[in-house]
Image (cartoon, rainbow, N blue to C red; front, top):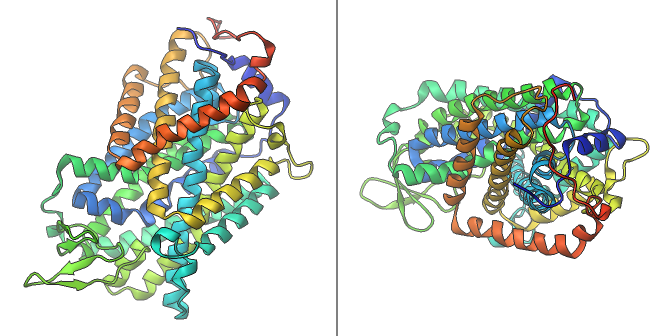
Length: 506
């Protein structure tokens, strides 16, 4: 099988060593980076959306999404250990399937990282506004905390937090990682406290029927909350800044994903069993949701005895709202405070990941070379960091969180599937290359990752499904209009062939 403009693994590794970022991250910092990226909007905010689609079956939704991510993570581990360079899925695809497909993956990753950062910042704004209202009794005008689709002008708090994170990332990776580790600790303590208080008082009758909307509802919920897991692959984008990446990157990938999956299930258990899941709920469109769902969206109504709906206080701060409903008002406020303090770590991770993708693409000539400039003092790609921050801030200002999350999922699923395909192709084209981490049962795990990503993609809303091909066509136009003619690989006027068989000592 031949691909156009393949950049060999040896060339990629040599390039990363020649123009490398500072290696300052250890195994612990890298794992914290993964956990920081994973635990965020998906569990603090989107839990309510998943519950409305699947009821108690969202427990299986978390397991399904986590299983597909684990299969993809194992594929990431093998490639990241072989190619300890920045760029993640984009770099791996370049080494296996060539420049055109690599560009498509890099372009799709904008949906994952930049749009994902905007989604998290938007959800952070909801927690921040709720915290100010409950603690300080100050109501911020909805015109400046909602997107135009929600009746506002712009989400200014989301813009502010993105610009602050951008400034922190310009200062340096080590400083950012230290701040992230502190924020991760806050998030873990908050979720632990939620589980300790909610699980003992849960009502087990809320789990019957367990799957009121069937397989379709469960799959739709899994597609929505897939956003809760996507942060793990930011670990691989930091490979070029990691000490001993062949060991630390696979360790951090698997550890962060396994840790977060366990936490998600505990939180989902407490949320479904809470009083908010006790009654049938009428959604904004007039449909009646099954018992066991969470009435946390705006304009939801609880159906009381006699069939008449009554207004239910709804909130974008899902977990804090649940604790307040069971009498823990102050603790609910503390959860809101923890989310307000900790969700920025997810924004940090996503902007961090996006800048490393852009940095690598610019280093390859597919984007303007100025984006790959490294700050003389901070040793960070400051130009591309600032550009990414401004773009993410614009998305957070004008688009609602649910729309942003679904768009992000479509790009992520495409990138994950391409990584799994790359692993299989590389096993055929370069079977003797040394693999510090060799994925077990790869001919089972990689196909499961590919099929799982396709299944979740087709389970998204129709608009989110259509976003990916439309975004891809725009990207191809830019590639053929700018990147292809300026590519460093293309300007050699020869195609670098796929790596052939080598000894394990090479």
